Image (cartoon, rainbow over all chains, first blue to last red):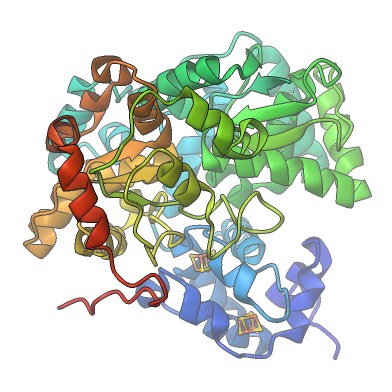
Length: 182
Length: 318
Ligand code: SF4
Ligand code: SF4
């Protein structure tokens, strides 16, 4: 089978370690049956892989599937073909961002988080919606307020992380990595 | 043995109680460690999703900062930190090109890392498998008998591969809590994901996942759920109220760290174990434990269900 160059399928196979295993997908559905987010996904993993094989790239990259993936690896440990499904989800996020095709807030969230890390070397607590919402969706944060107050009064919420000492070194490493990785 | 220590970002805020009580437990058990000087964020699940190479380089800086000769193993108390450190080391060892590229990036900061030099360990793994249950038992001054503690492992203690416990049926924490004398039911949802960062993206999806976990623990009459990951703790604790209002339930299950309940069994003052940092109060659990009569503990034990029966969670009413 020849693959369309630059297609989603081809990129997974050539760019991702062990990505070629996707070719062996049996469409057995173990992944979908194991996925805690499946009910909220446009296409659950098995269905998404069928679309990838069928070359429906736009549908694939506009799906919310990989943004709703919580990286739990349940699918990966249960896949009879040892397909690195979770890593494929990561890779699809990357592809969707690259092509400018994404439909959810999630990319913003990832971006905010990464911005924090690149600025401070540390992050606010992942999973703490309050920090994210207070900074980016002040209106949404009304809903978050009681939880945020509870966390604050227990000394568990900070809006900004501590900065590491050698930020210059970390930035040099990340810049270099981006340069090679691009 | 001496270990390097990687606290992780949540140790500075959200999971302060975990960090603090882990240090207390480590000291009691004679686990010596050295915090990595100037460590940086592991990138959690976000960094890997957007750009792979910088994500690996970000994690690798932490590994490179460790003096591998002095401390060839690093402890992470957070499951996500643990998995990222481990994954980076293993993938660099497995993929030559990745190794080269990460090291080119590290060189820009005058650092280098040779894969395999530092082994990543979860704190629970070190307590249970290096120190061992026997040594834990020796440190105990009181039993946790009378408490039903439900162990919840989440994703990364057993997944994706070659971690310290089984991906679907882990036992480490079950055995630890039994060693401490608690009643430990077989919780069939113990490795189902807590939803991770889903709380930030879809309240509906994350509350559904959390409700499922809480209902399972509630059916087992949990006095508390015991965790070893700041993200699991945060989701189950801070959003429990939201689950209750969304589903008209009334769960009041404290979500505590294994280090906190170990502290109780080691005779440490409950006040120093920071239970009050939890959003859901641990007061009822602590009172129950303090007032548990030895006789009632025995009765409770006899009531336990047939050992040979399979775990059978009841159907959720929707
Ligand atoms: S579990 Fe593996 S083989 Fe089965 S459908 Fe999913 S990806 Fe394909
Ligand atoms: S890793 Fe992602 S796709 Fe796989 S089961 Fe978990 S949430 Fe679903």
